[in-house]
Length: 265
Image (cartoon, rainbow, N blue to C red; front, side):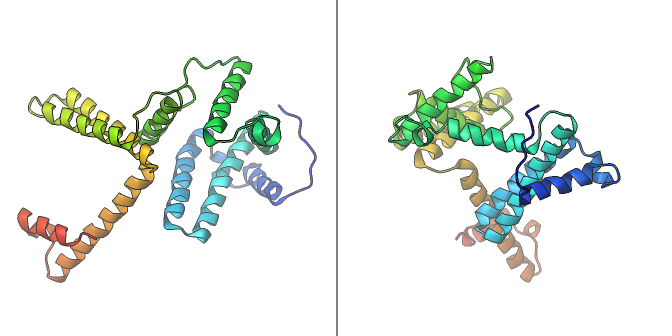
């Protein structure tokens, strides 16, 4: 374990002390029961709540949600400390050193005039780091976690492949790939083979994610915005029908389709 460094107490130190007391004998029973496994869903939930605050463009909410996410980091560091693995200061030191090491064009003598050059240096340094850890990367795709949400994983796969020179020429060719994938799915509809349809649907999603990448759109953010729009339209339709004493189930399909079109923004 890295040697603990004596530094002036900060607000972060105080938060670490609070979590330590919660986990100590005589602390909070609930906090003392938590494990790395039990905290996983909370870490995911807090991450998505930060994203929601960003989507809402709400600074106060973002401040609070970032605090909740930070608490998860401190909590995991405390569990590691109890296992004599590492401490919160080690986490901070590690990310500090990593950022400095991966920005030699800022903190060293390397020149990088463009974002492309910066990313190329970043990938090279990451590969050297893995080799130093006796974990040499066998593929440029190594390091993209298969645990990522599928949309983000597809996006990152496209980014890595593009850096290696494997990519569509631009948004127009990416659009063509999406159309071709949709045509392939349509051609398989008569057979009704579930495995073939599943594969074709995946090809469509992958192509659309990478079309978004070429357009400079984060697919998760774009889809989330559409989901919010759908929620608003659906609720507006429910309210409209409720005002006349009806529900969606009371409407014939043709009428419902017409009313839905009228809710379009």
